[in-house]
Length: 221
Image 1 (spheres, rainbow, N blue to C red):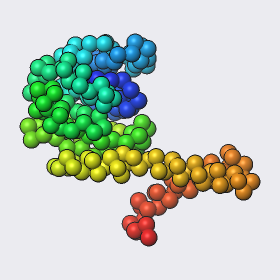
Image 2: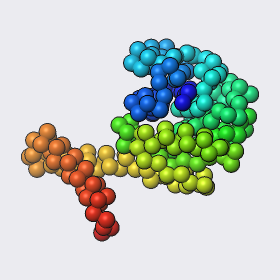
Image 3: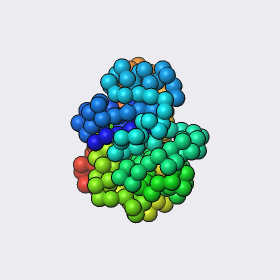
Image 4: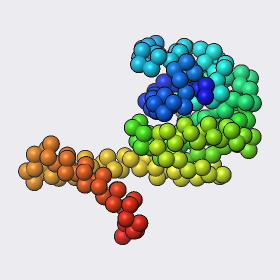
């Protein structure tokens, strides 16, 4: 699979890393466009992929174009890529809040998949909810599914509204767990447990409890 990444931020790099680890693509099959020269050098040195600052050049021969930019940069990127994409190319957007009709109109392209991954994707334990336009082919859906499976679990939905709901639950959800862990560690330290011991107790308790819910087949209650 030939993949172009527009944006080389943390989530884009997470997808890049697992794509290579699971041999969905090779370094020779990947191109990355990023505005930061420091970021481009980092990605080129670490992964051996082709890097550039020209978005149009990056997508030229790709089968999948992963949009991993910040929402505030979307309009500029769409203007650059409009008219440059061909029907066989799939655009996979992980941009929070960017709706499919906005992407289709801005890119002049109808083969769009939109996904909402979350931060545990950075270690291959993510949860992604995704959907596509009607024009996306079975083969293109397979490409998107394989990429999202590589960073964790994925659920395909036919109605885009579920992505907005998923943003509130799985997208924002990790922050609540982080806050709970932080608070419980501070409480443990407050009752005089050493901080390193408190952290180990809390982290394993959280992880073990999650696995117990998952594997027991019982409701949390």
